[in-house]
Amino acid sequence: MEQFSIFEYCYCDASNFKVWGRVLLRGFTNANDLKRLQSSFESGEFFIAEQLGLPHLYRALWEFSDGPNLDDHVWHKFHQLRPAEACEEDQTVFDTLENFVKRVEQVSRWDEQRSIHLHCLF
Image (cartoon, rainbow, N blue to C red; front, side):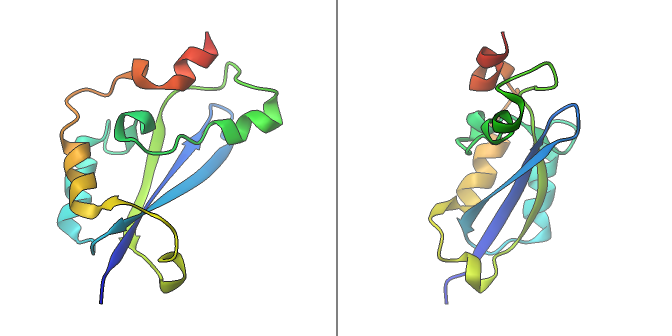
């Protein structure tokens, strides 16, 4: 039986408004995967979604604020990596767990210029 994991993350603006996202990864997570991710994220939890090919989440907040504003920034926040529940396994697989962890580890510097959001702010 194939196993899957869920990578959960969020975008939280300076006013603490949040929007949540998650992607399905093929493979079963373990404590080492979590350590590898956290050691690669800025301060153990922050990343640029576009740099990883993840769907960015800020546009969902723009619906309530008439577009980008001074509370916005480019960073997404890692929430958790966990085994997928059966009801979650019907969504599209984003990547394999191992490929995704390697992709995160290959980032030598989180580049704010890679975010389309930065260009919407200025």
